[in-house]
Length: 160
Image (cartoon, rainbow, N blue to C red; front, side):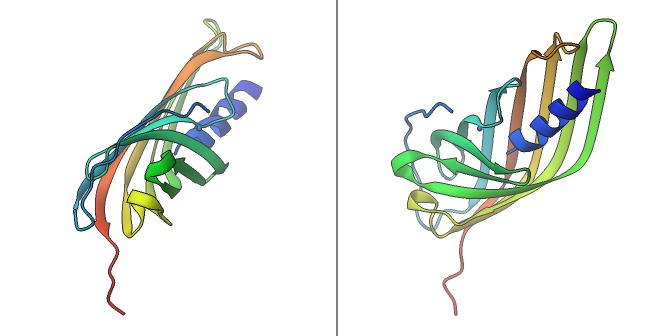
């Protein structure tokens, strides 16, 4: 039971964790389109890890968990965005005999508060988190959490 709580909490926190990767950015300030985010993280970590953005802005960076519903995606010199996320559904499977655990969470996100290439943009969309672990009966499960998210991105209105 402890593992289920830890993994579920980790999944929610990881959803949207600390190795920085270099990257490049390509975006025009008036671009409108679909932005996608992806991340594969170690289930035994505290959430967060590498994140990749592709679409209107293309960059590699780090997902830093702020709270259970907020993350910061830091793309270094290319800027940062704050991501707010909320789960809509969660399915879990535990196999006590094989000591395995898996889950899928689906939800929605909104991002803003951008700096650098992300300044003057807003976006929202849907996300999916999938995780699995072996050695799930002990205190040291081994596995991954894969996060994918996608939705529209557009410039903020400058009308007053």
